[in-house]
Image (spheres, helix red, strand yellow):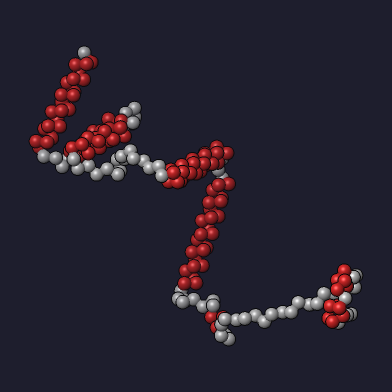
Length: 181
């Protein structure tokens, strides 16, 4: 073999067939810890923590197994329905992100966000409630729903207020009866 000086002297020797490169010089690892300090890395602050984490991990693994078993037991129709549900959720999330990105906000008042105080506020609240409830007019349960709703809403009213509502409903009833004749 050649010595280092010989190799450096012959610059063209790198492409020779018997050329052997020098072994790289290994750097000493610089440690920023005192001797024995790294041995304490795996010690828990609270001895009970380790057991609790292991129990939680086991429960999570069991849940994941159950979920994967449930998905394998789904019929093709159920799998398709699940895919469509996930796709719909994704599209809704994408739409919300797009609205946020472009600064579009729903300025249309919603029933949940309303807190009516003035007469106009209550008129708007009435309109929104009517739109929401009227969507279910075709249901066979609609009249029993209204009966129960009105009773529950009126329970706290005074007698005079109930009489006024009763009068309004009586007038409405008589008008409807006249229309039927």
